[in-house]
Length: 323
Image 1 (spheres, one colour):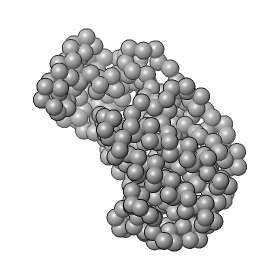
Image 2 (cartoon, one colour):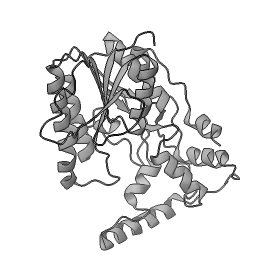
Image 3 (cartoon, rainbow, N blue to C red):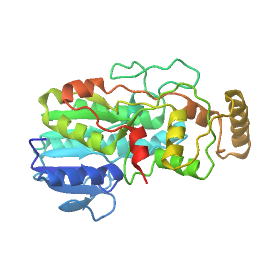
């Protein structure tokens, strides 16, 4: 990075990604305003409380701001229903609309929207041929969260702002992150994650530092204006490879056997039936099994070629470096 913006607003600043981004912007000499629902201490010059679901945003929120990094969102549930669509739209869609309207009248020059690959679709379920997805992927989102994200993306790209970019990261990992990968690590450590068979699936992930570098390049490069980019690391291990890597990182002995897929499918089917009967999610059901053994494999080639950055981190190497 040879250039920095002078004043940036980061929504969702107190989250995992938001804090890392704010620290990077501060290191580059920017004035950073963090924003979120609740006041918080962190690597910013000032923090503004705001609720994207409220009728209006705080007056003067974007005064003097030239770049907005819009990270704030509503986290998606593991299992979503159509009824939940009403819980995503006020924050993801209408909140983004209000922020864009304010930005258009406040002198903001750059608007970087952090969306999700779920705006593209759900990847390859277990049992289907593995296919790498990119920006040309023809499928449409199937979940309320993905549908809301896709609608918010369109609002950003249709805005009159001078420089607007949509970024679609895959699952993010790194120090301090508390999502699916740390949960898998803890499950393996406690003996609660079974040795799955090797299905040849591929799971894309991106280290937070690689994601931040892509964000910086998308901010500064004119070619990025009006574009959407898939952001992913260059490696995509299978779930079984991740399992083996986690065991090595934990100093656990290797496991040279696996539970047969047909046995897992029988147990998952029973879990789905029990979940329906008792109206609560079982630890293993057909949807969970599909996510574990299916693929979510995304290509970062367009971002690498146009943004001039190649991810430097491998999830397997990162796991091996952890204490």
